[in-house]
Length: 260
Image (cartoon, rainbow, N blue to C red; front, side):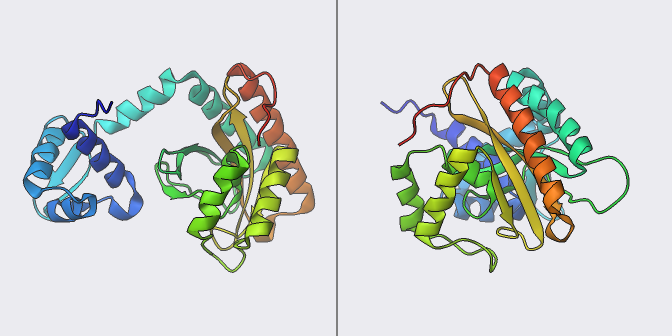
């Protein structure tokens, strides 16, 4: 039985839409059309969200964006989630050790990924800026592979049948190669990708498991591909595996489940 409340569901969809960078500022018409809902209904929900400071309305542009109350709300949510709070502390240490921007990635129910945390290394040098809240596809780079590798192999076929999109000339789009890579990630417990999602950027990633043996989060180091030596890559792999193993154990994870 579906216990969904339509107005609450619409409010959630609006907030999720506005949280995406490409839709960060939208008019009533744009929101209603994108979500395929009645404009009057959409306006009522938007005004309620505005009243509670969950969205902000700009009378000059007539556009809506995320509201100020979501900032302390998001901070509080991360503080109350023990796994996220511990991981946020860890990414700062990983960034310091590796000299790479280190991020936390969460999988959404629609299989998109979202940055929920970021830490830049101390000191000077080229840094990769990451926008917390930015969403991106699950296929195409190391972070997504750390989630997909621990799904069932039957689940992989859904992405293959939908078509593996090429985001750069280096993106793996061959189905057999894609499966081979996921099996390798499953065996070794980490993933590496070079300029497959964003030109010029490499990612080294490892999963954080929950008590049930599911991938709860992924921690990843980002670095300019031109600056990634074999030694730096190995340091990042070792550091990530140590941190993610510790975080998984803190979450109650005790053994590798059997994936099929």
